[in-house]
Length: 329
Image 1 (cartoon, one colour):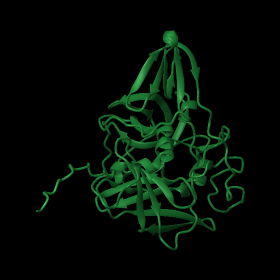
Image 2: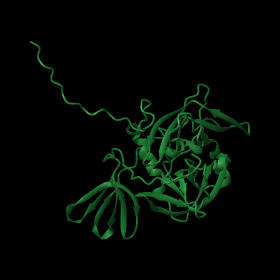
Image 3: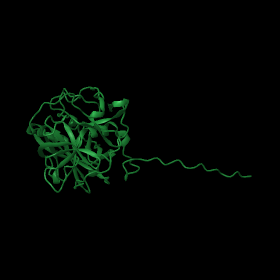
Image 4: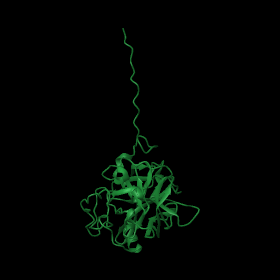
């Protein structure tokens, strides 16, 4: 929708597997398994699926981090100069559904990155408003906020293709909802127009590796002004709002930026913009990319059911009591 609004409901992680989880070994032979959100000299914040625990450092005996996902084959189009995505370097691993950098990307200027990444950022329109989004692979899968498309069935995506140094604006109207997570304010869509080309896409980074004060920038459609670039710094990595942790940034955020990407200077998505404080300036917030990866890795658990369009989940009917028919004589 046009108005950005916070999501205050608690995030329920779906099936956080032990293969993806970190383990905090406590003193007295106890342990906690979850995903480490932040580490400070005196405490560690851990997402255990239904809540976030803050563990004092003096109670921690050892921290065992999960192994990073194994690098998959490199993008079949990333190594081709000027083809396909163009935004994925040849040395970046692409673990199937989305692209994730195998090593820290080289630092570049916002001018260079905005030109390179702008084609992967889109404007999303519905009868009720508009927002932003970005492609995560060349097959037309894209991310936006749940609240951008909440209650909508007619969704269109406006993409700017680079053709011979010029921008060619195309509107795609066959957009299908693939998965929704209302609690995390995330939505996965797919462009299914028959004449749709291979899309430019952006890689996902690692917000845990960021430091407060690092430069970041956003690309989106504030108030419908598509391809708008704003720059700022990362103010904090652990701003708690409604039980969830967000990235806070001074990059200017306005209605219409919802669902757009927040980038580091390596050109990697480190957050999904979803709200701002309207009473002040330079108080924008983004969903950490780790939450996005969790959503994508478990997208089947959040699959949207066309049979129940008013709800992002499909519930099975509870079993009824067995009826005993009277015996006829």
